[in-house]
Image 1 (tube, rainbow, N blue to C red):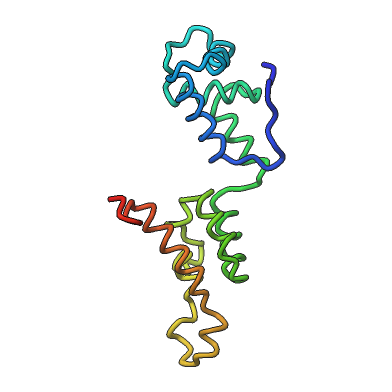
Image 2: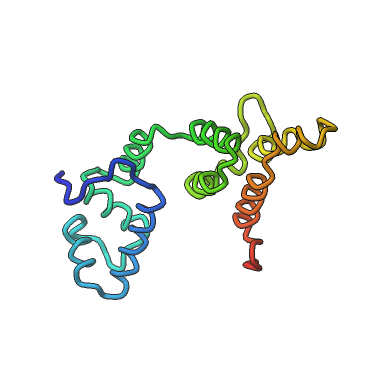
Length: 167
């Protein structure tokens, strides 16, 4: 299998999913270049493509036998799993890096329900562990990451379909 594309050094599963969705939409819209891409990888597939087949085309364009092989390579390259993402979240919450936390939550939505082995209350627990415990406003200010807690709650609300009246 020859790859017509190469993965970037830090590939994004979200980006790959969006590429597959776009391919399926382009084929459904009659885009001849998109149809040719699909035919090159899956000569006998019925059009329009299902999402699964669009992912398969994309995986093969990158030189992988299937979508699972491609996603496994992405995970291996990034060295990421949910435990890694949880460790990163712990670090960015400690650093009060709200933007990086938002990126992690976008890349790893499962972090919203993730719990560390020591069951520290998940991301919200990490961000608010000192709140109300110290009876010292200065200590709470230093150890509570309100902006990170808010980012986590916003992501959780959005994931539930409740953010900005979407439900």
